[in-house]
Image (cartoon, rainbow, N blue to C red):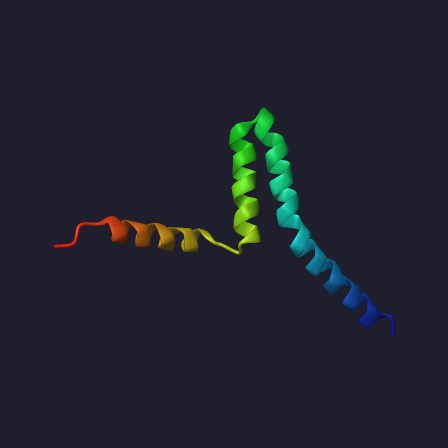
Length: 74
């Protein structure tokens, strides 16, 4: 009888974690950027990608589109 309530609680915690964790990553990255710029900026980028639900494939596709836009057309 206790199983459905526990499952519902776990689902709520997973949803809240999925919402808050990218913000936490960005905030930690901003704090670390003072002491170690490379690690801080890397964490900020990872957090922003997570917030925007972007993947490296999406970024690569965007870069290819920009390259195609500036490529010479015969």
